[in-house]
Amino acid sequence: MRDLYHDQLDSVIADLVTMTHSVRDATRRATEALLTANAEVAESVISDDVKIDDWRTSIEDRSFGLLARQQPVAGDLRMLVAALRMVADLERMGDLAVHIAKVARLRYPDHALPSTAEPIIREMAEVAEIMVTSVSQIVANQDVAAAADLEREDEVMDRLRRAGFRTLLSDSWEHGVEPAIDVALLGRYYERIADHSVSMARRVIYLVTGEHPAAVS
Amino acid sequence: MRDLYHDQLDSVIADLVTMTHSVRDATRRATEALLTANAEVAESVISDDVKIDDWRTSIEDRSFGLLARQQPVAGDLRMLVAALRMVADLERMGDLAVHIAKVARLRYPDHALPSTAEPIIREMAEVAEIMVTSVSQIVANQDVAAAADLEREDEVMDRLRRAGFRTLLSDSWEHGVEPAIDVALLGRYYERIADHSVSMARRVIYLVTGEHPAAVS
Image 1 (cartoon, rainbow over the protein chains, first blue to last red):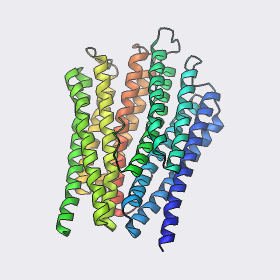
Image 2 (cartoon, helix red, strand yellow):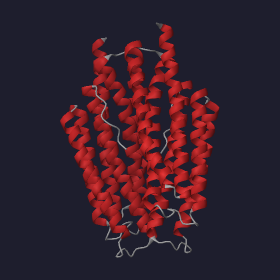
Image 3 (cartoon, rainbow over the protein chains, first blue to last red):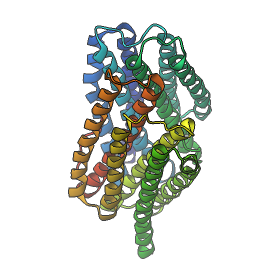
Image 4 (cartoon, rainbow over the protein chains, first blue to last red):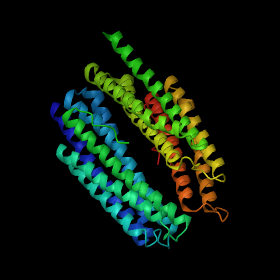
């Protein structure tokens, strides 16, 4: 019976890592839809989100079931509580990828991004994807050192966000209000994906060390 | 020993309700700072956020401690898991109030909102405040019927958001890019406060009924 329990615990972690891969793919494809004005790819990100939501329900139900039936203590308890919270982050990251895909779909067949805004959004998308990829490894390996490193990537994201605003507000911005709002919101979505990655990394730190890192604001 | 345990459980719920009141106050004061261009009030929302973060840590630590020491089952287990997730919603709502206050501070001594955008943001702020107020009662009374009603308020918020975009994108918008971005992001912040309220209401439904409501997207 104890062995079945540990198998179930391992499968919760394994599925959390798989779910993180799905979120990374959704982010990557949403970016592709945005940068290539591809409505079909945008549509697939939007319709596939239900799979990410299903992962959430499945991982939640099993984590809760293990909490209820096995009454785990110490490390296992922390792991299950961390899993319950990381699936909430992941579900939200999936929703943010959907928001990005919806901007691409709304502007199709036009490109949502004016050429002057494309480089900065492309860079933000790359940083977000790198962070989600890192976080899947951090969760898989419970890697506290890599989790602490993720904060540095997040600083890169903050710098990009500020640079994005400078582009939108410079005198040379000649695309008007609508694309400016799109770019501002897209920047926000990528920034939030990054924030949730940091939040997940911090949950791994708590899981391994038992110490609360400071809140992400 | 069982009595102390139930006292501790009750105090977790009571503090969750108090934390919800703090978040409602932060939202209300952030709106006041925005609508009256009051830098002092904006500053107080920003500096007081640490108190909301402290509530999170305190409620989290005690919930986790009760999970670890008391190994609760059924309703108590669901309650503690719900509490762990609701504090995450509340902390985030506090951060969103800070974002609103920061827009007011950034534009001070000017008003961040052009007069044409003020009515819509004022309405969004009112709906957000009503929703956070409802949610504190929903949590206090574990009121499933009121929790289900909250979805209707959220539809009002969605309509206001769309109306806001129409204002920003109409030919009569003559305030340029910067205030348009401010208004779009402020609308997003209020909408997210509303989303987190719905998310908390759904956790109360789960807590009482054991049924997962569908995800908020």
